[in-house]
Image (tube, rainbow, N blue to C red; front, side, top):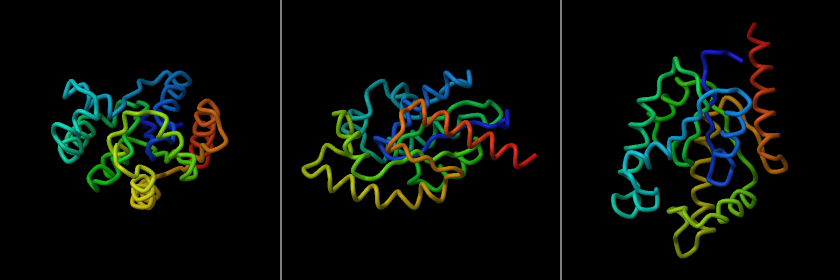
Length: 177
């Protein structure tokens, strides 16, 4: 693995980015930076309250500001929020940081996982399944365009996903040498 590169996790809510990020942190010893956690620290309230008080647009602006502050020369495990790919500037910033890994699963699995937690502001709607489906369709091509690697988590544990990512990165690095 290129020592000067971060591993950047993108994907829908419910893909397991946060858990996989923690597994990668343990396996690599790299710092874990979570853009959602960084935005929450900036506002001092949970994401749901940021959406409620300031709106999604303000959250997205803060998300881009956080990305701009991350240093490409300091390798880390970067965990992102599901909607980060909606801003084209963010795609460039993510790629600058390192290898972008799209952590995904089939839509039904992702929705079931995302629904387990009651703190997802985008799912606090009358028909959360329809909202999720719409977001999934809108974001799928953006994830695909941004990703260097894609890992389907449908049948894997978080540790297996982390191991798969590290193995694939090793293969890519070996091919480049």
